[in-house]
Image (cartoon, rainbow, N blue to C red; front, side, top):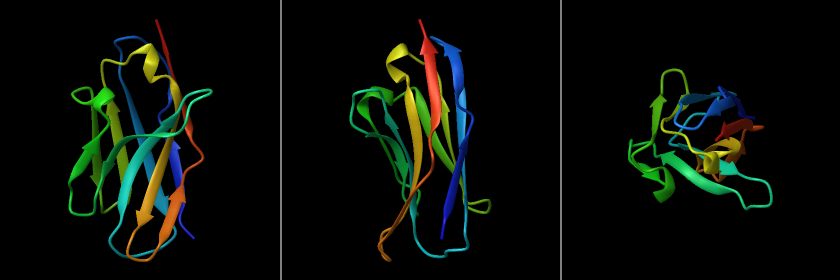
Amino acid sequence: QVQLVESGGGLVQAGGSLRLSCAASGGLFGRNSMGWYRQAPGEQRELVASMASGGSTNYADSVKGRFTISRDSAKNTVYLQMNSLKPDDTAVYYCRQRYEDRGYDFWGQGTQVTVSS
């Protein structure tokens, strides 16, 4: 069973930066993608950024040019560098790891990001 542990959330002023980390443990092997999603109060969970096993990335339009996803495969850890934060970025941010070939899908517990105006 894979466990995903997020860290790095917090309170920041608009225009500031945060870096989220998500460490995966559990011993599964194989091709997998990792990504970040967020959910604001009263809203649906949405994709923020993802990275496939081959390194290709995908970003929500709202964060392009401000957020960067990266991955350390040796540490089985994914990061989200968030710059130029806006109050609209306030949400709980969740890490996800998917083993598409094996049908496994894991989520972290979430970390709160609050951006004050």
